[in-house]
Length: 115
Image (cartoon, rainbow, N blue to C red):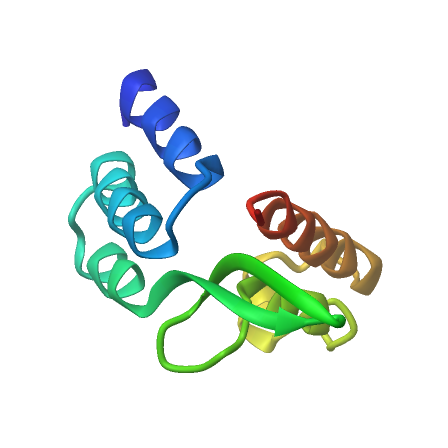
């Protein structure tokens, strides 16, 4: 992961403009930064920038392609869930408050990408 690929990824994530064009640039930058592994390719195909009605107006954020759900909404909801067993097993020193902090930061990162 080069510094240039990282900068391009961050720029693509924070770019403004047409959701379709933004999505294409984001996907390209995601794969350049994270590589074209099977999991990265799958993730790149399953997300898109979408403009959706929210709170009496519209918002454009990174969302699931298959549903009108922003990624920030998913992580926001996940903040109040129990630590998944797979996470607890991998990081036994992590407690519920740590999990909530991880999900809160992830939510804020996704929200920061909205336009």
